[in-house]
Image (cartoon, rainbow, N blue to C red; front, side, top):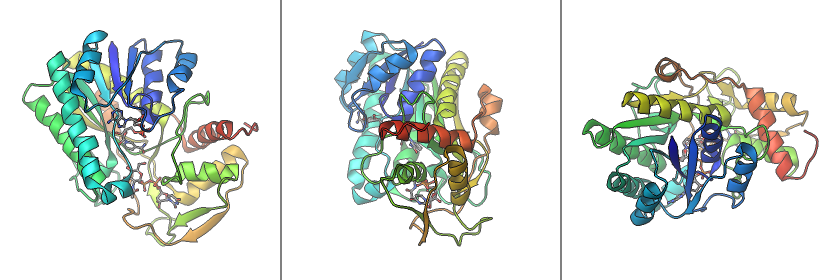
Amino acid sequence: MRVMLTGGAGYIGSHTAAALAARGHQVVIFDNFANAERDVPARLERLTGQKMPVIEADIRDVPAVVAALREYPVDAVIHFAALKAVGESEADPLLYYDMNIIGTIRLLQAMQQAGVARIVFSSSATVYGQPDSSPILEDFPTRVENIYGRTKLVMEDLIRDLARTGKLAAAANLRYFNPVGAHPSALIGETPRGVPNNLMPYVTQVATGARPHLNVFGNDYATPDGTGVRDYIHVVDLAEAHALALEHIVANNVSITVNLGTGEGTSVLQLVQAFETATGRKIPLVIAPRRPGDVSSYYANPALAEATFGWRAKLNVEDMCRDSWRWQASRAGINDV
Ligand code: NAD
Ligand code: UD1
């Protein structure tokens, strides 16, 4: 297939581009580079041997999207382009409604004009809010706890509506748990701007010496060691899931909503321990107050993904730590991996 990736130069998009190329698909990257490095397409070409066309434009620019879809021509879209910072979404809700919700509506309009009716969408476990229990199944209630989460849920609903009314032939809403790691080649990875909000990028920056210690946000949660528990998933596994989900919905003309996680909960202290084991680097810790808005524990039941399109995560937390570090070390010019 020829697949257009909105946000294809970003963290998860670039890994999915590599996974699609490895399965023989042709990739078209559509990205405004608001949160991506310019050299990602060249790195992807080195990694995959495929020269991927790049359209530098905004998904809200309907004529630009229509032109891109018609030019190649495109069989399906994987839609990553979005803003994704919870704190920023609470500070500027209209910005998030515009980029994420209006952006998705414009993209869907362009797809309809160009006759492209298959989409895979980047959703998030954030749609479950504070779940009553874990492991989380897809039919658990959804709950909006912040603006970012609201935009994800609205975008999912738009896509489900269009699938239900026959405007989309095939759609997948993929609910990611906590994506971490990088391609083992260290050619692509995550480059957060400013101080990282998320745990793994922060840990890797402590390991390079860029930050003095990790603040552990709370050690009094009702979890085995008191620190927050998450379902970390290697971005290479996540990328593979996009390729399999796409092939499944296109082959069967169906629409699905599926969790993508490992099914394993890992605490902050367990992740730090795994990082130290995988990399030989010591991570100094300071116990800090809980971060407002944090959930104590959540992890996926990923059985539906396996039953539906035969995917399950293969990489473990030490693989995630090793590959995150390999990427961060190469960026920092450290050669011990
Ligand atoms: P990212 O910021 O690395 O990638 C997003 C890409 O989209 C960037 O390359 C950016 O330049 C581009 N982009 C943003 N707005 C655009 C616009 N209006 N037009 C064109 N391009 C635009 O983020 P990511 O971590 O790769 O996340 C990808 C998707 O997955 C997002 O929708 C995000 O909400 C979702 N998601 C991410 C996580 C996570 O932890 N990283 C978890 C759950 C869901
Ligand atoms: C965050 C987002 C969530 C998003 C997810 C995607 C918030 C409130 N939630 O969730 O919407 O879908 O990222 O990756 O921003 N921690 C520390 N010290 C740190 C950083 C994190 O102890 O410096 C702890 C947190 O308290 C949590 C765990 O590490 O227990 C994971 O945090 P993080 O990586 O930010 O992910 P989420 O909290 O799941």
